[in-house]
Image: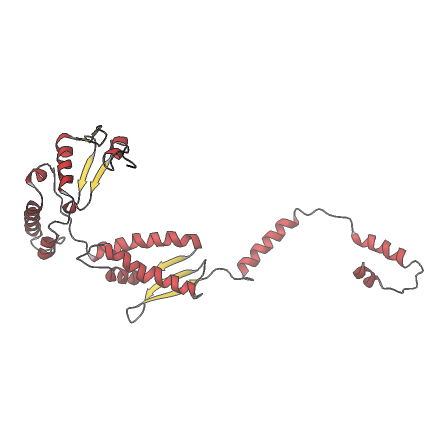
Length: 274
């Protein structure tokens, strides 16, 4: 079949770059055969691919993520600080270890060096994530020389609309699309915003986001463009070469044309016609 000579998706990258970090995401959803493969990697530090080649994993850092125990964390309400914080953390850790033992086989858990429990994201954390996502939006707008100026209240509102303890930080991307990208795109299609504008995003008295153009691209005839035109003309004038005066040539042609001197044609008419 096509591709039968190619290496595996796991072994081939490690074979090419043996010093790396290998991440397995959401391990609770993996097929049982994946755990059998990991037992060999975690125990012997090597794996055999479909071509019979032995791939060395001894120089790899292997990380795994899982949502096992997230229900216990949500129920017990693990948070930073507060009263009895250490006792609460230990209670949550015990609940997570119990959930892991019910989900994964003992021989797999015994090969894991350390379990790290992450605290749930709070509104302050999502605010920082929203800043990072807005910076990515600004990078795309840079192609159109547009700038977004998001006030602190607007940033808080965007983070609040994307805050969901059950889903973590994923809703923040949807919040930015709905509250920043889509409104700017719609107003751009209606001609309210254009390339080069600066858009200020703020919150009004009704706790709704507002989008105001605070700076615009320089229109035709603006001082900015006129000043640039003057600079161009000044630079061009320095390169001009002085030519012979054409008036004397026109005078000679006029005198030859009106040799009789009767004044039947004026000098201005002759110059225009010629």
